[in-house]
Length: 443
Image (cartoon, rainbow, N blue to C red; front, side):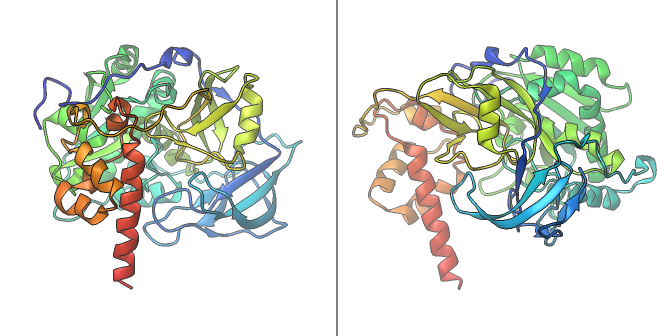
C-alpha cells in the first residue's frame, strides 16, 4: 500500500463540520425516567441476565454476566428497580432481549459499586480478566470486546499498542474532547493495556486538525512511558485501523487478517480513557460520551450519557428545529439511519446526528465508468465492478474474485459517485447474503 508520510493512498476529504461541537466541554445528561439495557450491544454472545422483574439495583452493580470468553457483562447505569426483561427494538432492526429499569428519581445516583484493585501487583492475566469484568468494548463503534483483543493468537507476537485518536468521521468530536479533558486517564489506560499485552511501546495517532490534543497529551507523558504522540494527515478514513497502522508504522495488514498479524493492537482513545478510570476502581461501563450534532439540533454538544438512555429522551433534551428530520447513529459516513426512536444509547454509539431531510431525492443513475470510486477506495478495491455484480445478484463472485469482505464500509465510494449509486448498501446486502448462505451450508 503506497503512501506519503503519515497517511495512506486514496481516501476523501469531506467537510468535517466539527466546529459545531469541538470547543464545547463534555456535560452530563440527566437520567431518563426509564433505561433500556440490551443484553446484546457488543460483538459476540449476548450477556446473561442476573436480575429479574422487581429487583432493586444500585448504580454500577452487575446486572448481566458474560456468556463465555467472547462476551461481556452489563452494569446498572443508575440506581433503580427492574421493571421487566423483554424483547425490544434495536438500532440494527431485530428485537433483542433488554433489561428495562425504572430510575429512582430521588436518588443521588452516586456510584454504589466499587471493587478496588492494586494495579501495581496485577499481572497480565488478572488485568485481562478485569477488562472483561468491566464490560468494556470498543467505544469507537465496532463494540468488539476489548479483553479479546488482549489475547491475540499465539502465532502473532504483538509489539506495539496503537491508540486511535483520529476521529475522522465528520461532526464527531467526543474523542477530541476526551483527549483534551482527560489526558491522564487516557495515558493510564495505555499503561495498563501495555502491561496486559506485556509490551513496552505505544503510539497515539491523532489527525493534524487536532494539534491542541497532541500538545495536551505530550505535556502529560512521563519520561519513562515509551508512549509517542504522532500527528497524521487529516483525511477520511484515516481512523480505520488498517489505514492508521500504515500511516504510523508503515506496516500493511494482509487481506483477511487482524492487526495482530503485523504485531499491533489498536484501541480507540475513548476505550483507553474509560479503562484508565474504571480498572483501578473495579467498576463497569455505565455511561459514555456521545456527540450530538447536525443542522436540526438546537443545542449540539458532547454529552456524558448513561447507557440505556432512550434516543427520544436525548432528542428532547437537546431540542430540535421545527422541521422534518432524520436521525443517524454514529457519523454520516458509516452511521446508520434509524426508523424508530424507541431504541437506547449503547456502548457502541459515539454520535447521534439529527439532520433536516432533503426536500429532493436524487435518482440513482447508471454507472458511467468514471473511476472516481476506484480513486477513493482506501482498500484498492473496484467498487464499480462490485456494484454491478451486486445489482445482478452475483454475491458469491463479489467475494471470490473481487475481495468483497476486505471492504470495511467506509462509504468513500458512495460519497464520490456522481450517479448516486448506494454502493455501500449494496455491499452490506451482499455480505449478509453470503454469510447466511455459509451458515446454512454448515448446518
